[in-house]
Amino acid sequence: MKIMSPFFVPPTATSVTPTVSLWSMSTLELPVLNQVSEPSAPSNGMKVYVETYGCQMNVNDSEIVLGVLHNQGYASAEHPDDADVILLNTCAIRDNAERKIHERLNHLKHNKRQNRDLVVGVLGCMAERLRTKLLDEKMVDIVVGPDEYRRVPELVETARGGEKAIAVKLSRVETYDDIVPLRTEGISAWVSIMRGCDKFCTFCVVPFTRGRERSRALQSVVDEAKSLWDSGFKEITMLGQNVNSYRDEVSGYDFADLLAATARAVPGIRIRYSTSHPQDMSDKLIDTMAEHDNICKYIHLPVQSGSNRILELMNRTYTVEHYMGRINRIKQVMPDCALSTDIIAGFCTETVDDHQRTLDVMRAARYDGAYMFAYSPRENTKAWKMGDDVPDEVKSRRLAEIIDVQNEIAKEINLGEVGKTHAVLVEGPSKRNAAEWKGRTDTNKLVIFPHIDQRGYVVGDTVHVTINRTTSATLFGELI
Ligand code: SAH
Ligand code: SF4
Ligand code: F3S
Image 1 (cartoon, helix red, strand yellow):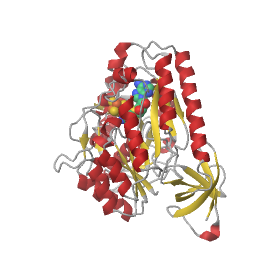
Image 2: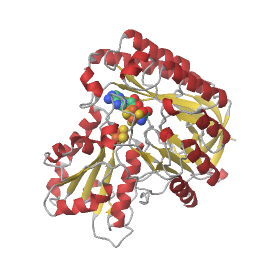
Image 3: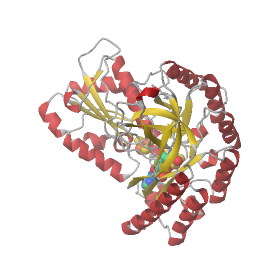
Image 4: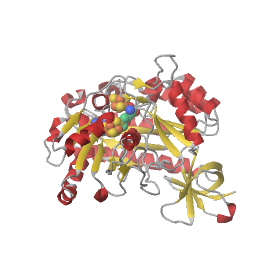
């Protein structure tokens, strides 16, 4: 189960993703339009439609896959019904993420009936986890893991020749840093700075589906940020499973160095990042954030549990005391920094006392937002062998309590925003009412304000808004 809380509808501008469900790196709000783009090579007459599920890394990966396909003459389709190739870029983090894909594949039967040449592919973490098992599904023609996206055109060709195809080798070096992701119009861009994860939390499939950690060279990220700024992007979010274990292997630069170098090279752009691991949240990183105005004062720092016993079973490699030490240091150096977290309810052997400790940490850290999940056992992880002894109804009850506490805290924090004025990066009309526009603060809070034409501001401008009303999820205000 995934519950989204407070203000987590980040700015985004990807248009490759008609269906997105996300976890901690926050949730995607779908862009204005699912844009159709023409191929960058001579057209091969084929149209591709990519649907993205999972986290923002998958969103950026879909842009990479589209970049690869466009270089081979593919155009984007506006709708799956118009496509010659439909690719589902999938997530395997929890059981329900995979169930959704099985249902979607089932629906695509209809498209296959209408177009017998249609190629259906499964990409991403579920492809890597289930491999040939997916090829057993009648609907699926190609299966491609996260490190094999350069081969998508070749695999599509094989499928068009009538044979199923699979490529799921994980790489120690692939970062796709020479591929230009196919981003369409927007003000906010995802930039993957590293891939894979070496942390091996016992509940998590990511180290298996994404392989070992590897980072892009610092200069390639800085260059990408510069070119995004030159082409009109106002904000980037650096992505990785643990961005703070980023390391440029050649120069030895770490994540704080990368942030500082980007902040200096592109002083006008807003820089965000996600996700950071508590073990690697160094003083240097916190100080670097404080030093640069264009590094957003917002940190997603997943705690998972407030019980040291559970943290150890999870192999999270920190204690609650270490975690709270990091939170306190952040608050000391950047008193206005917003914080968010991920929490898992009902991990194996979790007692009422462990659960209470999680609520205690939430009350002590006072998160602006949280992603809260019921534990979902994943085959082949270490925790799988520990069993799943917390009954579903207990998990649900604990999760509901966690959500209640979080909502209460977020409401209180947001009430404190009334009367304050924020610089808001304008994203465009709000979903509910076109007379109102929305944008986001440096601290990643969603702000709704009346749209005043005469002021002449446009998407991508920064306006100043004084907050006059709030909920646990949103701030409302007036332009000044
Ligand atoms: N790399 C990030 C998180 C990646 S997965 C980090 O370590 O912080 C995103 C979130 O999904 C995790 O933080 C965790 O809260 C949740 N999650 C991962 N595996 C899960 C599982 N098996 N059951 C329930 N939630 C899970
Ligand atoms: Fe999964 Fe842990 Fe890696 Fe995050 S740090 S991706 S939770 S193994
Ligand atoms: Fe992301 Fe899901 Fe894979 S959260 S890394 S797409 S398992």
